[in-house]
Image (cartoon, rainbow, N blue to C red):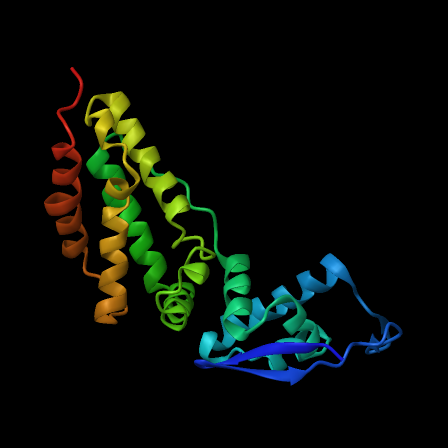
Length: 222
């Protein structure tokens, strides 16, 4: 009988896993398999996140809602946090870079969008997941907004446009430089624990930190 690792809070333990019989059905329906089953589980987990937040998410509730048993969940996601992050990815939307015509306008608008998202009910779920993940990079990189590559790509798009317009030097196209503003915003939420960030703080991040750093990388091309 296989053994599965389970997670609760900060602790892991082992429990015996009972395999689902092939002939098992739920509510008289044929048992789903593969992608169909995984989709149903993620949809159920996303619904639980929306209704109860990460604090109210449990493997038992998701299994019941998906019409399966929790051992099926553990075979795909070793603990609640992994399932929560996977479910959040179903809810998160693709962010397109703004195009206001200036680097300052683009950067400020993108930061304002991020602030609105983090201040929303879905953003509250994201903050819960970040708190649960702590500094574990293997979890953080699975969150769309927290992936260094994804964040850098979005902000590098803004910088690339600025270079073409002659507002910035090509030397400014550096991943760490590009993501300074969003990292500072994330720190405001994580360190201060506030529900939203005042707009004057966003303006300060852009005008006092981000733009001076970009300009310091070299003069814009003539």
